[in-house]
Length: 442
Image (cartoon, rainbow, N blue to C red; front, side, top):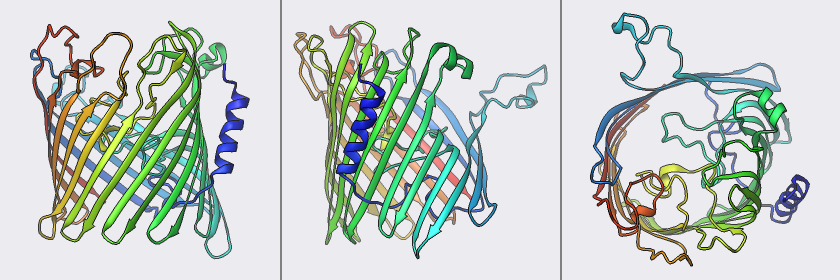
């Protein structure tokens, strides 16, 4: 098994040999400014027919996310931040007692601590600082392909642990250690050695006003004994290092972005035993940004695994998955399919007047790799997405959106999306998704 000592050594060497610099991580304890008091109410009304099997019904519901938080500067060197969040489906709470008109009384299951941390900061020089936070916090690094707050989700994503950020002029380095998950409670961790942790370093540097390079390394540690697997790829123990390199820039009206992530290490699969991890994720963009709008052509790809006999896991592990922003709005790629995915895409953004922006995406999804299992791989399908953003009202964003997925012959390979089997015994049809999402902030 790839030991913790070896993994940490690999992580340190990779980061020290490829330092780059960046701005402070967005949504983190290190972003600026930090408002003293804030809140949000964000309902989202959905008409959802994402399941592609012809027997799947549509559903209509309203999701509601409400937040309130504050940040207090407790001394010259310290601060405290608390944020509470309630996430629910309207009308979905269980009835308490016999009074059905007051079903929310005594029901606090939808309320949780979104952020709660204390931070110490030491300032030196004119623009240099070291800041460390401990508790529950948000964290998004780089473009958010490996680690993000997943703000689209009604619950978003938070991490429990410790993070530190150092700024020296343009140099910016973030390191963290998070307890990502335990199965039940602290006693179970001690008794059964069951837990998942994530450790990482990430840094970047604007080389000039138009070009930035970034690099990072992450160590994903999982211990599970013989319990039911926690991870989507049915592995138990895992020691996986992910190396990340990214460059983004703009030259006149031309924009570009290139990011590549590589995973190595070992994982224990229940049916196959110890396997070596060798997987990758590539994202490429080139575009045009002018006052009349933005156009991007892109190619995203997560590696797949075409063999069950080579002793390797080549399927990229989207453990802290990025959600909608990179692989469309329809949720079919929350977990990387076994044979990977290649997303050939077009992104378009056009301002319509002073307060309205139209956004559109086109995706063509195909498997990344073939197979020696005798399975003929066909395209997963195509997707068209559109949104209208309205910002006329201060601190308010109105979003009207729609997504249409047209399944290809290989759509049955998408995990969780349909019930069709390879023989085609269940026919598929288009999936669609309509939503209205007003966001009110203060």
